[in-house]
Length: 594
Ligand SMILES: [Zn+2]
Image (cartoon, rainbow, N blue to C red; front, top):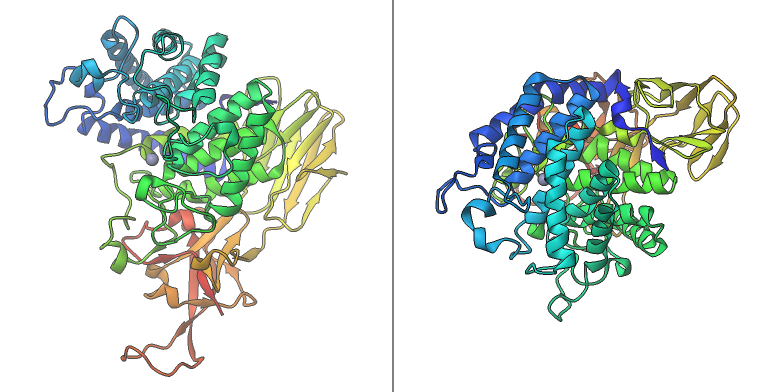
């Protein structure tokens, strides 16, 4: 299926308009300034000397590339911006100038370890190449300028020569996947099928024996061929970027074995190894998946990049095979475990997104941090946020000859392309959605979210795979009302961490309690699921929730005879994505059930 490109859609109101304005007006500059202060852009000059204290890190090029890609997306959705374009063009000039005669560019290896090119699988050269390629494609599509694209085609040709034709590198596949999906994008931008074939080559080679030995290490997905994978293991971001590449190749080559592997992995993640927020990564050790139902809240790693890459994977699946379970996961991620990664003012970021903060413990542990930071030494997440938000409309629609699928609801209108469609809605502040379209399709299919128990549609419909199919005849207006009550959610009993606890959701949005509203010892707080829940003020874009909380009475001794006496107090819950915006505070998603 095809997608309506994000650049042909304008978000015209609501939460995502606010977030896109935040990225355009604040975050893109904030990340750029931090990257300049830390010499990431200067590194492109390749004037460092080996042994310099600030010598470029092996993944700095990927940080800069993701910032460049973000700038291209802002220009693609808003308007050309002289300042952003000058930064972009200057960076491209440096990259082209300092690329060697083969087209190779890496600000770390070119300067510090010239003789070690393509010798170390774990050192991110192909990962950086992938992000540079994505940035080049994004800029070409936003501006028509092809200098960067041509340079990256030359680089990709060199990678093809070294890895596929000569097999002269010291390793066979990217240690940190990303190039696989980037090459598919390069193929679409250039129509040169060699890039698609090179991506497929890497997908096919992953997990094969290297130097005669099969690895037992699942950190890089090395322990078995990808078509045989059953569970999602190892480093979450590596795994999910690779699964995106797998889904791309499965679609492009109509490869049913690879698609089945993608489906198995999706089910394993979303039914066994994912937080209610859409976060993944249960441990900081290896930033990785662990085992089924192991979802510790305070020690959750749940990296922002892992949430983004899960949305990218689910987004690919939603376009390959329309089933609402895929779009449901995109939605779960974007309103929760992704959006928590950036502060409400757009200037600081979480690398990890825990579901519980107790400063008394957290500040004594390595992770997670209790406050967002402006930059990290490993700063992959901030520029991933700045590229994801401007391009978020890419997830809204897909279509074939007869059906236009609406996967996501955002106040928006199409501004180009052949399909004209308008959505008028405050979603997810409420569930009222008005759709106006005049399109040459037999059906329009509206996703009914998995969280929604009842809905109304103004026209006759038929349900299929979680989508309501409405037959079209000329210009059509459709009113969809999704009932959006406040709900208490239980976890599977095998998630021992959440035994006896519930989480509160409204629509796709997960809520949390913070100490700043509710006092200390949140793990003590009980909620009556049959109690009265009301919507409160919308300090953080979406309404807060008010109910009565119950907590054990305090006493001085360490132990006493138990009773069932509770103190009642007004409990305030805020959207999870907004936690930690009012100083260091306790935070908890899973509350005790009274
Ligand atoms: Zn990250």
